[in-house]
Structures are given as C-alpha cells and as structure tokens.
Amino acid sequence: LTPRRVAYVACDPAALARDLAYFRDAGYKPRFLRAFDLFPMTHHFECVAILEPAAKGS
Image 1 (tube, rainbow, N blue to C red):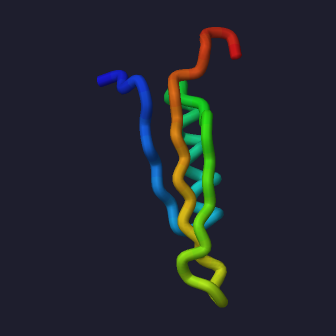
Image 2: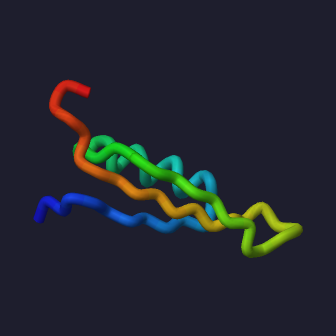
C-alpha cells in the first residue's frame, strides 16, 4: 500500500524522532506536526504528525 497521507501519534519525543526517520527512509516527509501537553508535570506530550510522500529528489 502507498497511502496518500499518514497520521502518526507519538507520546515520547525520542520515539517520534526515531519513527520519523523510518518514515523518511520509506519515502515520507512530515507536512504538519502538532504537540499537545496532555500530561503536565511529566516529560510526555502527545505529538500528531501528518506525513505525505516526499517529492522525487527532495
């Protein structure tokens, strides 16, 4: 499958960075990223990333 868009949710900044690298290697690029502090006083925050296929050569 080659989806036009992927919505990815992560609750840990390190996991988000790691997984965005996997998506990059698969040919996807983040087009939108938003963070939500749903658990104040912790290092966790929810991130929603919208990924789309990267243009050829970018």
